[in-house]
Length: 426
Image (cartoon, rainbow, N blue to C red; front, side, top):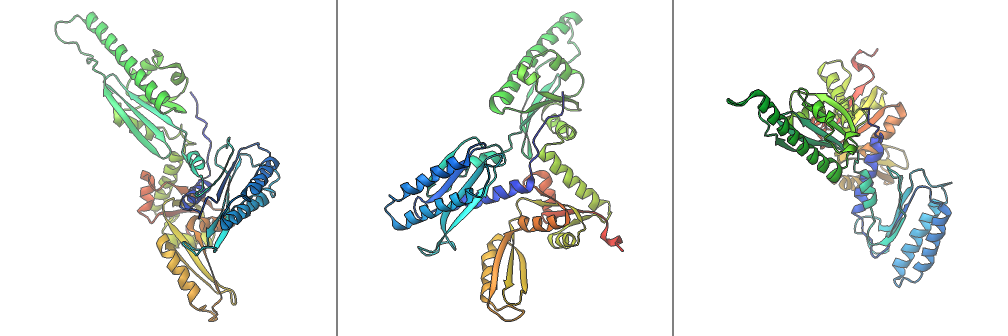
């Protein structure tokens, strides 16, 4: 039984891919002119380039002038971008390109050819080229699903429960009573006969548990590992009796002594398995939040929360670890005067972004009254990542839907563990 080896993923990178895919899912082309290219790892780029150049030739047959020119331009842009790579990135590469209205619902002919490049989070093994009225994002979306499933079985002589840890959720699948008599015999039965009957009942129960465990953790949810818990020696008897199917028997990563079996036992076993699942994202996130709340509750001065306060500390190089939930839905909008460089900025929820951009664009610069104000927006995580990179701060994006994410939501969705107590700074 050993520590399970689970590949650690970069939470900021995954967040950005998820956000980009959300954005791309909403895009639709005027005709079948949005291009999707999935390039598997190890594939020669020159082969892809020549195949896309052939597609450009075929596109000349498209009847609509506008669609034809959009497809040819988009293919040209993808080819141009691919020529900048010396070789295919280690895990492969995905490109989306198409002519899209410069503003939502802009007039015909106002389209701008836009390209997105994504390094897949896992090895990409299939080639795909599509020219369609939407982008094909499903293969990437599937890659974002956490496939590091861990099974839990909490068992004693009275009952058993099954649970599944996937992504950031522990889910109780089901529980069952054993029907096995208690240890004290009913009147009139000889001790020997009673013991024999109880052993048969237990053996029948173990076989039933093994069968259900196989159905759950091989047939329905193929798990990376199995953790077995429960009070007393029942779990050891069950394991040593080799009732489990051999693949599961070989996949047991730990046994945990616990006070409960059944559904309650699943939650208890998860709480006790943090060190075994140390590489597992949900456990990491839970630990980050626990560390943050420890600093806040013990008044060390090293726990901070609330966006404005955290940004201030970040700019002053006080933040060691910055934690933000993935559901903040905030964007930073800036208006920069081309003439005097005066900067206006505000962090807003998504629906308020366009009105704010319009306001910056249509009003004179407060610094020099010029109307030459350039307007930009960026996702809050992109903005924080830039600030964090300047000061060597670790940035972690955590799930806002998980229990520990909800704790951070109650503090405004952003928190920070500081390098020192700024109140004591000289």
